Length: 461
Image (cartoon, rainbow, N blue to C red; front, side, top):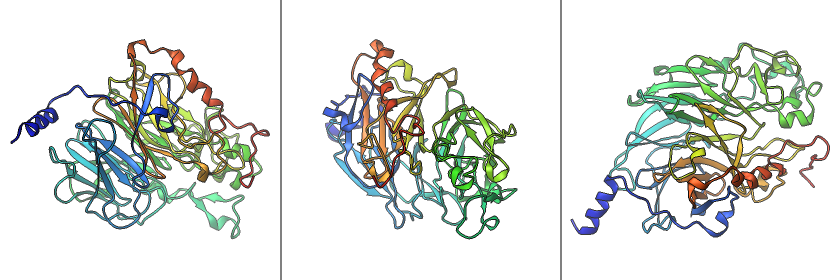
């Protein structure tokens, strides 16, 4: 063994003082709070979903690959400049569908998912690519379907939590309206999807070849969830859902186009065993801070329901939260410790109002609960402030991961660009005034609540 390899092994096996790379001029196009900077790790590796960073700084990314194999990419920085020098595609498993999302590192294993299967592969010390074939942890015997992300979280007791999202908007019964009609559609009651979908299931993280019935329904009434994470400070599960669509399209008498754009909330949930969050029978109104009865089930925009659990926080409608990370590092200022970073992928259906979201938000936490309002942490992904349609956005933030040095890594889903966010200054001197430039960004068209008259936008304009 030569001296260089010996030093490399020692450095990988012990806690080390990381060399923080110099951030890029212009921060790779991102707007960040004062004192923060960004390094572009890689510019374009193809449409990506979630990512995970290993203890030695290696990065693993889940690609959005509808068919074939090699749905993962591994990246390594060999010279410490923050840029990926080695980029290698791998993964001997079948990709099925376009919503496959997950990439997690847990207890020495790399966990990843297709739409229908959760896999894991043992990480090999000092090697970038895991050796051997992936093990199958869970098989979903259902068909390829909408929203089927298979996002994962892990607790401290050996359980794996898996999202099984609903495959419809609100469990519509299209036999209740004429063909090609949407107004007045009713929903199935009871909704048959709730038997196995629109919820979170819990499994043994170490048992191979499980099917859904080997697990336990942990929580229900959750339409579609991609952002899910275990909070080790509170020892509980959190997630953010994608709320329903088409309130105006289904009930134009009680819901205007503006209400269609700003309702319902994307719900930030703390999720306990046997919780029910009320989909498809209800939605959460972020202006009234009330759970409302859905129009397909007798609601009219006024009727409330108290049968279901409320979120811990309501985020604006259609922002599409696609990843959640509780920050536990020491590189950022203390105010970020244990707070929640959220990747907001951005809306697609707020027309005739501007599309919204397309940024990474931060929610401060205190005593295990949100403190204050959501904040703009990283913006500029879209490249424009006025987003008439999703195609106008250059990038869409998708995945989050924390590096061993406390850096925050962000992936995006259109081209596969990855940023590493670094704090450049003395964190003990950070002040709330350093957030003012980001607070002012809330006035941008893609971040503010649209004005009913002034913000009407034509896609064809």
